[in-house]
Image (cartoon, rainbow, N blue to C red):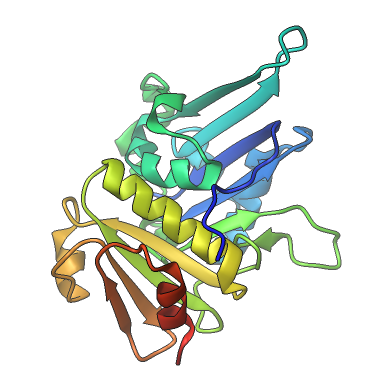
Length: 248
């Protein structure tokens, strides 16, 4: 089974849009010609059944990455920016964009767009955004006759039609990064079924570890399809991990 790094285009623009509840929708655009922020807001509206696109999440709940080639030296350069409200998701950003922590620059706090009091005024109209739906979706612009969203290789929403997985880790460290990369690569390359993956840091959310009966990290929990399954420990034997996930 292949366990090499995620293969991305040499040149691309990437955008990640998070919700206050921790859901994620992101895109990778090799052509750099699409208004992705607008598209992601519209796709999030569709995925969560919102009354309108949540444009107020931009830019406070976003991260962007731009890779380009220097026309003189032909070297690849990367500029990656993350806003303070979603900086805690850097390990996940590293996994989906094949980066490391050194690549990310934290954008200075912007009171006019990141004020918690202002954001809170949207909660009543958009309660879904403050809930966790175990959602990680990759957006891909497809022909109008087909769906416009794909979660990694397949479209996925948090429904029983696909796999619902939760990965419990602790802190932002080398072990966490390695675990995230391994699991993301496994699901993207080998599962071949719709899935959603939620990454939970038990140092910040111990109550979720307790409610999911997690006593050691890392732990991967298959919430759906039932029965619930747990894989505890280092995930070096990836064929075995895949077998446990995919077996009824």
